[in-house]
Image 1: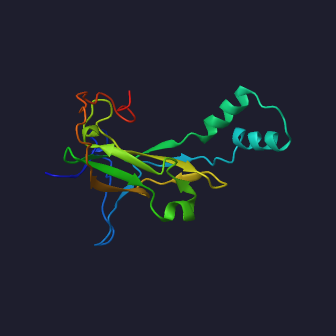
Image 2: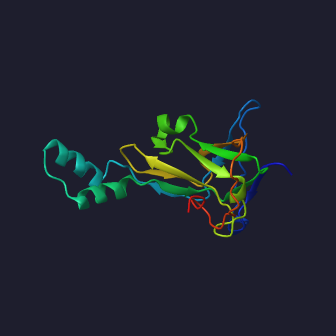
Length: 178
């Protein structure tokens, strides 16, 4: 087995769809949401308050900035899927081309990277999540089974004379930098 997808054990009886390519020349495997999920619009509450204050040249407090920052944080949309691959490969997560145009949904970091050692990690079994932000003017409800992003398997290279890391992954999402 070189690379592929499996359903995370907690979703085994949820009738999830494994990622698949939609056309014979497609590079990306479309991922679907594992459950209904509401993505709030960023144009709500404290985020807009900052713009009004700046426009009116009001002095802002640290709390004002913190409140706005909380609204702008991306949401982790679960897929219920994990990916296995060779040690010298990664899975790049990307927007579906229609998501920003049709639904106002974006990956705020542009792409996501799923390392080979994320698979079956003890924290979350390697479940893949898509970080999404809704820049549309209304909240958006993602329905279970709706395609939310795509993944592309890619090889990677390492630098000559690298001091190769020996640390093993011990956590789940966002744990490799700890």
